[in-house]
Length: 378
Image (cartoon, rainbow, N blue to C red; front, side):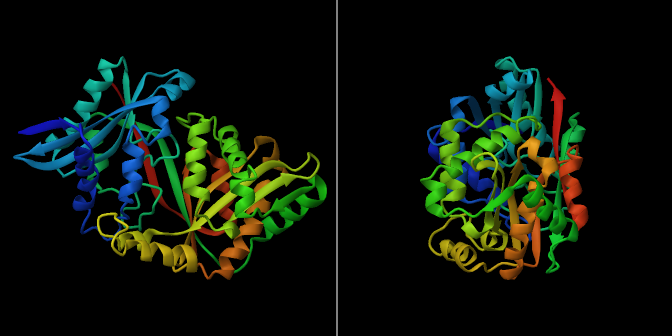
């Protein structure tokens, strides 16, 4: 018999987080999350998203042993924006037992219905900046720090429970060939000459103290506002993400595009980071101590990895046809070659966003993973 217990204490939350490390301990493709990062995301006193979200976390036990977990989340801002009454589920992990998965989903459904929700959707986080989607293709591919890796039986369990596809994300792996695609060279040159678009390489001080980092995240609010399930980032969230992403980023891998005809208006950006996937696999249960920090430092400082992650890219709608994205790739790609990266992994992109996905046709790229958000009326 399965018993469900709510997370009620910090010790419970640590157990909730630790369950995944144990479940995937022998999976060669899994990339564990950092423990402190998970803790800060899930704690109500640490995550700025709780200004407009509420959540409950549930753990499943059989004979005293933990066999599954799930988070229930209601993003009230997103529900208002999209005019839906949705309870999200995320952080879902379970052994291959239909009773366990059904019990976890039922816990979130019951909680969501008690709050007036009429559908359940997921896996999703508090906002788009969290991992979302369940892997349905690419189980034999290496995971990464920013998207889920899960066992192949997970989507089978959800489909058996009556869930259907709500949205798919595609992930692409680019083999770097030491040459910028000719199309991007031509379009980038045209963007400079015809539209006076310029590449800016900010210093860390300019990013952190000069306001450019905040401008990037405000641009995200504009460029991502119509994407699936998006809720606008608050000022408090933007500050958190600036510290999280920009505070340790390599400035060589941040490219800003400005409009020379509009007093240097920020119109696009690209942020990449060396892949931490293999380094994270060497950490013990996601902890930095005693020596986990060293593996991450080797990647951060000396780029000891063969892959770079294309973390965030955004261009204002009115500048997409002016080649701003070509300027981003034309600037970043040579820097990847100089660092000796062999591969670039693009973060999840919506299946329906064909214009963005079409960028990869000019590279030696393949779609190697597919993530899915499921839905069900409750």
